[in-house]
Image (tube, rainbow, N blue to C red; front, side):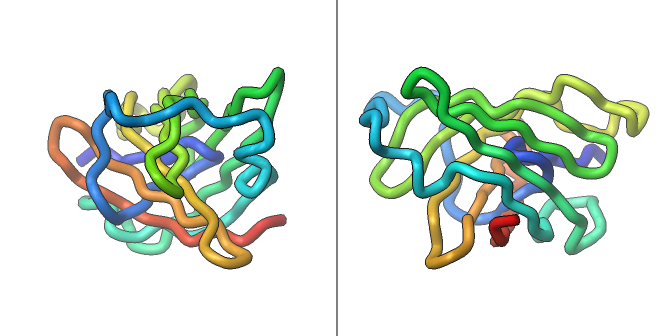
Length: 140
């Protein structure tokens, strides 16, 4: 069973399914995204086949007006590529760049993130199986 690894530094989130290509998404204005930037840690739940509550870490930065992310969870490490916004959600594609688990990381998943009070809510969706995972992370 493969483990979904969310890209804003590790872990999978569960919520509403996301498409990797959403034509209604818009580019984030320069001032947008600062609410989700920073380093976030939390536990991932809902990832089919993985232990409940595994730890993940996501770091979201803004360079040249564009959001970028790095994620790590267990032996799965990757990047988040910003795709746009859909309402209050920031959409990314997570791509695993280093897998030290022996092939248990899902190589590419859809990710969406938004602030939920003082926390960051992250939802991962694996495109082939539809498996989802969620994380409600705290800023560190």
